Length: 58
Image 1: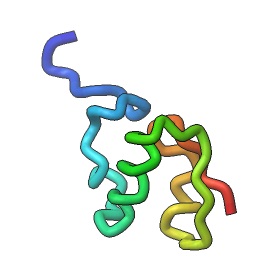
Image 2: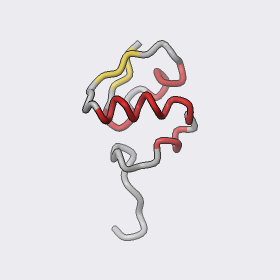
Image 3: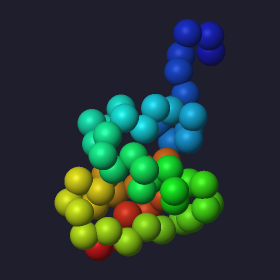
Protein backbone atom coordinates (compact mmCIF):
# COMPACT_ATOMS: atom_id res chain seq x y z
CA UNK A 1 0.00 0.00 0.00
CA UNK A 2 1.22 3.48 -0.71
CA UNK A 3 2.40 5.35 2.36
CA UNK A 4 3.45 2.22 4.19
CA UNK A 5 7.13 1.48 4.61
CA UNK A 6 8.81 -1.90 4.24
CA UNK A 7 7.73 -4.60 6.65
CA UNK A 8 9.96 -5.34 9.68
CA UNK A 9 11.32 -8.44 7.91
CA UNK A 10 12.21 -6.49 4.74
CA UNK A 11 16.00 -5.85 4.47
CA UNK A 12 15.26 -2.42 2.95
CA UNK A 13 13.95 -1.29 6.34
CA UNK A 14 16.33 1.01 8.17
CA UNK A 15 18.55 -1.05 10.43
CA UNK A 16 18.83 1.75 12.96
CA UNK A 17 15.09 1.38 13.73
CA UNK A 18 16.19 -1.12 16.37
CA UNK A 19 18.12 1.52 18.32
CA UNK A 20 21.34 -0.47 17.96
CA UNK A 21 23.31 1.71 15.55
CA UNK A 22 26.68 0.24 16.53
CA UNK A 23 25.40 -3.29 15.77
CA UNK A 24 24.08 -2.49 12.29
CA UNK A 25 27.39 -3.40 10.65
CA UNK A 26 27.11 -6.97 11.94
CA UNK A 27 23.55 -7.36 10.72
CA UNK A 28 24.43 -5.78 7.35
CA UNK A 29 27.35 -8.21 6.94
CA UNK A 30 25.09 -11.17 7.72
CA UNK A 31 22.51 -9.93 5.20
CA UNK A 32 25.19 -9.37 2.53
CA UNK A 33 26.42 -12.93 3.06
CA UNK A 34 22.82 -14.21 2.91
CA UNK A 35 23.44 -15.77 6.33
CA UNK A 36 20.60 -17.49 8.13
CA UNK A 37 22.43 -17.41 11.49
CA UNK A 38 24.83 -15.06 13.28
CA UNK A 39 26.73 -15.94 16.43
CA UNK A 40 27.06 -13.20 19.02
CA UNK A 41 27.80 -12.69 22.70
CA UNK A 42 26.72 -9.06 22.68
CA UNK A 43 23.34 -8.84 24.43
CA UNK A 44 22.26 -5.97 22.17
CA UNK A 45 22.48 -8.38 19.23
CA UNK A 46 21.08 -11.43 21.03
CA UNK A 47 18.13 -9.36 22.27
CA UNK A 48 17.18 -8.72 18.63
CA UNK A 49 16.58 -12.48 18.22
CA UNK A 50 15.90 -12.59 14.46
CA UNK A 51 16.33 -9.25 12.68
CA UNK A 52 15.53 -9.41 8.96
CA UNK A 53 15.35 -13.20 9.09
CA UNK A 54 18.89 -13.68 10.48
CA UNK A 55 18.66 -15.71 13.68
CA UNK A 56 21.06 -14.40 16.35
CA UNK A 57 22.53 -17.25 18.39
CA UNK A 58 24.50 -16.99 21.60
